[in-house]
Amino acid sequence: MKKKLFIVSLVLSMCFSMLSIVNVQAKETIREDHYVNPIYKDVKSSVVHHDIQTYSLEDVEYTSDQEKLVKIFREKLINRESNIVLYYHCDEEITQEFFSNLVHQLFQKAIKHTGNGKEGDYLKWHCQGWTVKASISVNSNKGYDLNIFYDVSYLSSLEQEEKVDEEVSNLLKSLDLSNKTDYQKVKAIYDYICSNVTYDHDNLNDESYSLKYTAYAALINKTAVCQGYASLFYRLALDAGVDTRVISGEAGGPHAWNIVKLNGKYYNLDSTWDAGRSTYAYFLKNTNDFDDHVRDNDYQSNEFIEEYPMWDESYTEIDCNKYGHNYSEPIYKWSVDNMTVTAQRVCANNYEHVEEETVTAQKIVKDPTCTENGIITYIANFKNNAFKPQTKIVDDKKATGHKVVVDQGKEATCTEDGLTEEESTVEMVDVTHWVFTQDNKTQRFDESDDIHDLLVNMVGLTFNDCADYYADEEEKESYGLTDDATVLTITYQSGEEETTLKLTIGATTEDDAYYYVSMDDSDQVNTVSKESVDAVLDAISKYGM
Figure 1 (cartoon, one colour):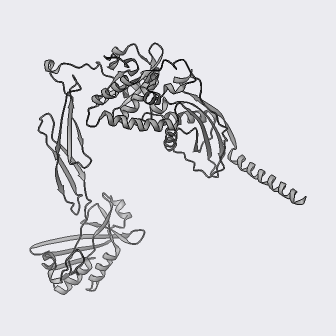
Figure 2 (cartoon, one colour):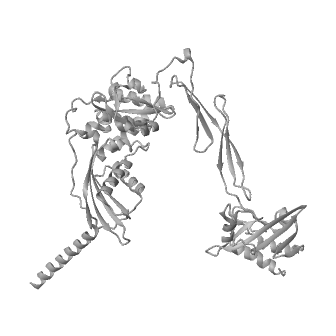
């Protein structure tokens, strides 16, 4: 009996411990909020609500960086996760109004147009809505930790989207859009949709069948309503590299269509209404020629119109043999290795008329010097006079810094021949004398033995890294490069050429491995191995300096 009482007592103790943890993490619970996609406000909800616990017993990382949360949110939406948890930290008190603004703002940013076919409007038009709950706790720093729990419903599943991914890849390959103009890409995609997707009249009034609104229905089932047509065009065009948006509005009832960017501005197009037609009536139209479509307010705002300007005229193919060409300004595209450049210009009268030329660039390499970075210049010239010569300059190697090098005798290795000291380079053998000046003391070395000993210690006296390219006087002082710093002036003669180097030696780095130095009163501050500098100073100190 005592044993049973002990077990019951232990279980109750554990329960109370668990409850105390929950109470700490869920100090205040915010009322839940909702979002229903206005596009589907009349559609029967397919949401499966889950019993969400507004606390977590796991170790989690909170962040006040909303952009980081948006990125996490977007990835989870792409993966069609139904339960999405975000952990937000805030220093100010979290009210119901603050919470409501935050959760809607995070979602709107997560579905913002990015130019990626699986994001932006594609997410917006495939999300039916969500419910969100949260809890607040005060952390040890007196800030507020917010656990945000979204319960999201979608019009398509992860498995269906994976099938879409596969079919989109196969379709774009079959359309062979590489090296095609944007117009040719748009025309090929539009032709495919209009020829292969039919309007889903059978399920039009069945609000329980929400798949008809998806790109999956249009691409896989080959039948959908306008949202499916527009979402599929959006996905295919963006994956082909052409910018587009999905537009909602009224056209005899709630409707969806696209705008697409060609030659710098946008055209309207409606694949739903052109499907099955032999001659298109809604392909690449301006606003006036598309007046039976009225945009929703969001797409009529000055901000949206400024970001997505429309062409004044609808696109029409003009007989260029009769009226001549009207070419746009050329566009130049460099290859990844910069060795080729492709120039292209498109006729505005007929987008099928394209002039294109690819040439190999001339490569000119400028090696780095002590003070200047190395650069590579690529120059491309075209035979077509309409294309201007192109130049591209790429940084190559960093400046080497001043370096005194001596090639001494060395043993042979598996890849290099050996050298005796008599075979050292002529430049260093020809050094006739060295003059070192330190703290106003000057010492000249003429004897070959002394010169050789100094050269041995000069090896490795080279800049390691640049600490500051343009240091002012205050910054120089922080590096120990003051008026009372050690200054080493080295003058040496090789043949008839005399060279002088002035090295100001400052403080050591935090790890005591390098000195901060400046050369010839330059504003550039570099680091030099402390060991190599000390070796030179020790060597010349033997001669009373």
